[in-house]
Image (cartoon, rainbow, N blue to C red; front, side, top):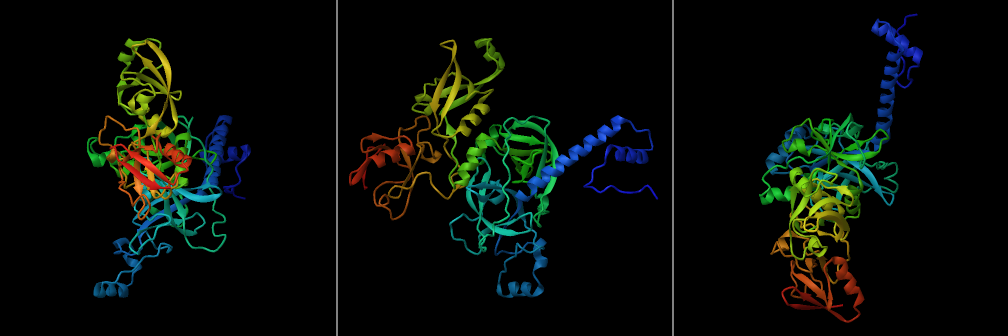
Length: 524
């Protein structure tokens, strides 16, 4: 019998079998160390196979397309000459069928199935689904559509439940009309935690590069964590309004850097550990915007991003924390001159504290040095802005500061405000945190940058964010952007305070006091 028997891939060799293979293939003397090395390689292989098997059924391919449009050249073979003739002669347009195995989308990416209240949703990058229809809205034939392909080859239409351009994350909801039980077998991915991840750890990336996952089967690659808390430079000038709108929270150092190649189509895919748990959402946005294409990034799954994801799963606008200071950096030389007892080399500082800002109300002073936020070291202004932003408004931030005039370190607890939103068009929210009162929806005074007319002075008020048409509020002189300082005689500075004040009043009407001195009466 010839010694050419191949060991099946699912039956891993014993130590004697490996020795036999090495002796034949290598033609050299084999040692016990060689056998141990091969065993280690097979152990890594088994870990990869198990992790991929655990995670791949929770990764979906996403196609973004127009239901009716001029067919691109790459899909032109889907239309027969008769259709082309009708289009040319009568101007008729024909839709494309995303369920067809011949369909190749022009715009594509990936998503990860997660769950809330046992219902499946799709987590992905916002730039993958930008422009798609929203949950609960009517669509017309020319609207952009989203089509999902699962690992078991089933296909579904989806719409955006909520999206946040600042984190570049979005959550989709499956909306395909299907018979009862059509979601059976859709498996959410287990969420891991990237909080304590280290450089050098092995990871796997599952995605849809170059739209190869048209059958739903995601492509896998492996690599290591190259670095953490990366902050790639954004495209455009920081002083340009349009560039400022595109600035994300990742600008301040949130991203994981991975050495898996993140080509077009891998955005929205899963970064998993060797247990098959989701520890990040991969993004190829850096490659799309002109960065080095061999550099891969992922949005980490940790307590901060879980806060964002939870808001999106509820259909809410994602809100970010705000101090109200002009931040600066404290270099090592300057910090050493202050004291030689610091456990870190650099820090951040408040160059200026704006009047009536959360920082001002919380006791922070100009020139205070900020060493930590909620026990996390702060090495510069980017760390400060990231940590404050990720906490969210209405929450307390514990700042460990050095005050030069007092020559000591102490802690301040500051209730944060809301980061002023620049890109109001990009935010997608299908629900509000508070039910509209008589058609009136209010926000933090800093909720929208366009309402802040005096940048260095923040009013003690709530801003009018939206007024529903044909509502009691719409019948008054209230306008979007107005600031409400009091409900009857109760001062209000947050949406919660506003609604608490409304709920306490039992009169037939409510008087709203505006910052400009006007009073508006609305029936209760």
